[in-house]
Image (cartoon, rainbow, N blue to C red; front, top):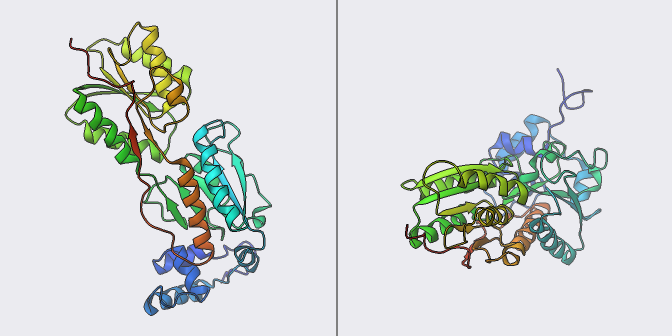
Length: 339
């Protein structure tokens, strides 16, 4: 019989215990850390202890020492710092961390998007936990299945293999955009969608499709850069058939490219075509006309991500609920042309 002490055997983790007991990893931490009384039921505590015993789970003492604050270091994994949004996420996380005597190590993907190499193949023991954007999820293989708590930002609620999540109400943001454009009278739309595969962009597409199910919607995908967005928009606006009167973009960078495409084609924004963004980056007020967009509180998601990690490390339940977002109406959206 192979046990967890057998060379090559899989050593059970707290995540395995949580899965076997049908509870969250935070609950496992509460029970095995003897902090469960008044927080979970005796029955649940018994299920956790039984699952731990059956799996032969023994807490990693080194990891436990880390969670008691011996390193007081969190890793923040983001796609890139060239995007202002993630720089602000870091600022929020670092601010909360500093109040609790923690530091935040930042790891952006070298290419800006897509898979990143394992930054700490042998140094995971120097971390208390990991906070990561869903857009950088390919960089997290090294951390899943370990005892390091993982807090995801803007990630799929169906993913249970994490300690906690902090989400923005992205779907509501897209509904606010589409409701705004419908109220202005638009019925023909171009969705300039991000070509980067990510749960957050899937949510935008689903919310847009649901709200505009009775409208004429065409979708084109573009890389997250101005040049790629401009080229994709030019092609879409010159395609056969009625021209869209509004372009809904997955983020402000794509929207800037869409505005450039419109100008190159001799179209006025918003008189001939309205353009909306998402994120409310500094870019949104640098372009002319200024962008109607959805303001995402980037610093707040960083703050709540760090707060959620600190809660997990102390055996507490992170605060529930999605972070609200706000539509900011500016000059890039208006009624459709009369013709």
